[in-house]
Length: 145
Image 1: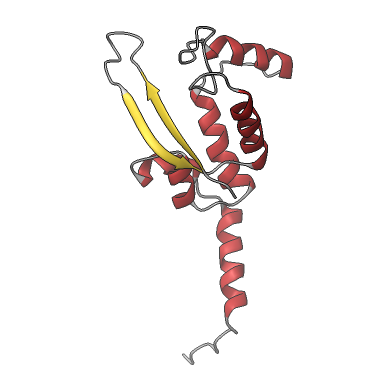
Image 2: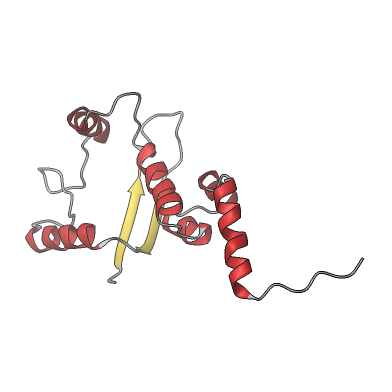
């Protein structure tokens, strides 16, 4: 799997959000996203893959695009950009069984407690864990009472 170096800079939109986030790092990504980004990288004409028409960084509002995609997909309800992160976290955990520590790294959580929202206990998971434990060793004889 190829890794891609990314730089993310998010400037504040309002005075209520005075923080500026600047992150450099290597991010694992699925083949479809990696291939799309590599194709875009080959065709880029500025320093940015997602560039504004003036060649600077992209300044488009993503929420209207998400709402349009939501309508096209027939998904109802309130949808936020952040919900995409939750969807990724839940699918990695519940559908694919990815360990929480790995999800923590992918989502760039600073603390495992942030990632724990993707790990609600289920009786089925508990039973599956005990079945795996049973398969590891033969049952020990019960002690005499």
